[in-house]
Image (cartoon, rainbow, N blue to C red; front, top):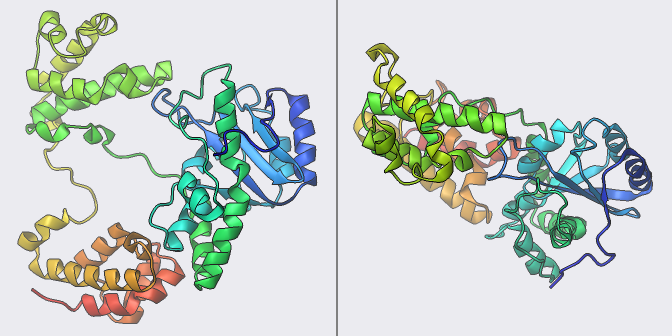
Length: 396
């Protein structure tokens, strides 16, 4: 098991002079650049990076604390230049790196490469052990990386995350080449690299865990009121919302519908020392929800611009249900024949939308155009257009 990097764990860079020296080394290095970040998910509200790990041949490993250097990272962007970045599950790290002004010119995602190469388990440690024969130290991925100073064992863990990324990249590239999938992977990597930021959810409060237990518009208004109050408090304090008030507490309060501090404090969580101080705050939000006029209450239907849940298609549109069943069968066969996860053959949401509202021209050419308009990559279109065209002719 690797518990520390072979060359040792470098000190964390916290000042501009040390950063310039590290940038000189990185710029003089060769080959791809392994990059990772550590965030404080579950502890902080904002998903920013609290540590950036970088490794390049000839430069070694660099650990950067972006908090004191947030406005001074331009030299790092210059040092990385047009080098290929190697990340694991890149979509998780790219947004917080972009906030720091760091953007890859090209990308290799080892997690995505592992999926396309047919590996069933694609966690970094799993792939490193299977393909390179090393076992990585585990245990700190869910830590509070906003803590200062960072413990030495956490820094060892962080440095190990980039220690073997480039060798893993090279092994996966060789597998993809042998399987004839390297171009597919390159298209996927580019799609991840250039993906726009996800738009804000229209009604994020509907994702409160347990909200399905609340069945009335008035109750949903209360969930919304508590969720919004919690989110405002969490944002101001830069604390994870679940640490301000758990989802379970929101649902319990809505179902119990307390009207006095004593009734609220009798519920789980709300009787705690900290929460008792905010009893009046939460009660005011519940009272406001009770007094909302009917036209301002949320719908019990989630709505959205997509098709209904697939388990309702049989009642709403039997032909659409038949198209979806035929399409899923066809895509499963394609996925198995190429040793791919079916969700990588075509995004499930795009498949559902295409089957619910087929293109006016259901020929392979028409389906190919519709899939491309929906964001499918060229390799996916080539792989599924014919089979999906046939499936779209299915009827109940």
